[in-house]
Length: 216
Image (cartoon, rainbow, N blue to C red; front, side):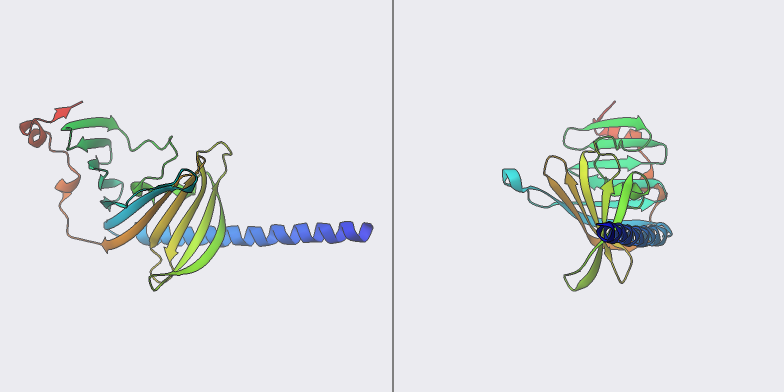
């Protein structure tokens, strides 16, 4: 019995060491990706997102969007809206309804949703890490990292972040919710250090008033 207990203890310790090494390797890879992509003067990401829930038979068509980031500033076009953050205020421009909502600070993450503007930073707080599978997707090697929320009450059950092994750029993000739904972001187009105007991140109030937008 004592030998069995010793063997069991040794197995548990061995598994803990392997898990810790996997966690450290995953964290180092995420930091490398964040550092590399964060060093660009600016980035343009064209992406698609798909919502699925196999339990209730939902599989939506891909929704396409794009985002231009420069430091903390960004211009995000998604779901028919333009999200403009100038570093201090967020402008949510609904072009269909011609309404604009203005708030201090960035997008609220309390709903647990990972917004495209947070791809480089969301993992830094609130997650445990482990290395996932290495897959070949459309001819490219993609290393997945598994992220599990520390908060057991989180609306997110699991996140899988796919990283292009060659470029060290984020390629795919899969977010699984507690309701069984899964949202997949795939970056289809990437450009860095483009010649862009600072006006891209500036809210032109007069332009929208002239076009009869309602500003809250």
